[in-house]
Image (cartoon, rainbow, N blue to C red; front, side, top):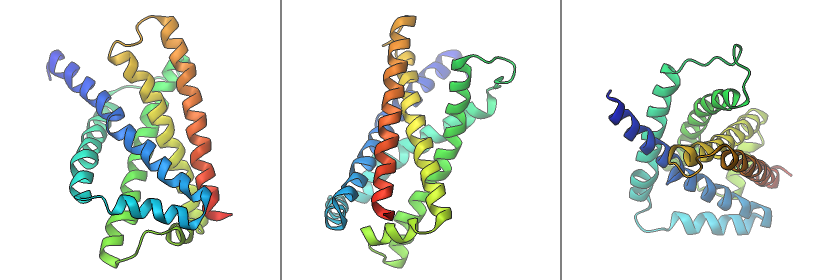
Amino acid sequence: MSQTYHYLVRRLHSFAGIFPVGIFLLMHLFINSFALRGEAAYNRAVGFVNNIPGLVYLEILLIGVPIAFHALYGLWVTYVTKTSIFQYYYFRNWMFYLQRLTAVITLIFVVWHVWVLRIVRVFTGTEMTFLTVQAWLANPLYLTFYIIGLLAAVYHFSNGLWSFLVTWGITIGPESQRLTLYVCTVIFILLGIAGINSVYAFIR
């Protein structure tokens, strides 16, 4: 793979991680937040999304394909990149390692999530409702896995946002990169809290 080709693919990979994959994550967290308003509010929000015309095609083209590209290239980068966290204890080195680790966790979580909440639902005819999610999260193993996957996805997005700004030359100097690191850390904390609050709404 030539340097130019690798450079372009890396930028496209970074872009896909924010648009539309990151936007999908934010929309997913937003829909789940309706659970805080109760069963009826959540069911209305999910019903609205499920009734979007051509939803299946939109999911495949605007979500499925970008996620597949981002995940496969990310796994390749994870495979070929040598991580030296025990040799170099730099902060960004740890962030780089955690970005790769959460990439794998997030991919497993997304595959499981799509299988359980989309594919199985089609074959079994199960409606995606507040009570359906509540029943799944009543299982301690599912609940634990969901929270780990949620936090991994949120971290991967937040730290990926920092990398996106660097990769695309938006934050160039050390001061701007340090400032956006703080901002992205706050984004991680806020999204993590919001996501866990939504989970709590299902199990309380």
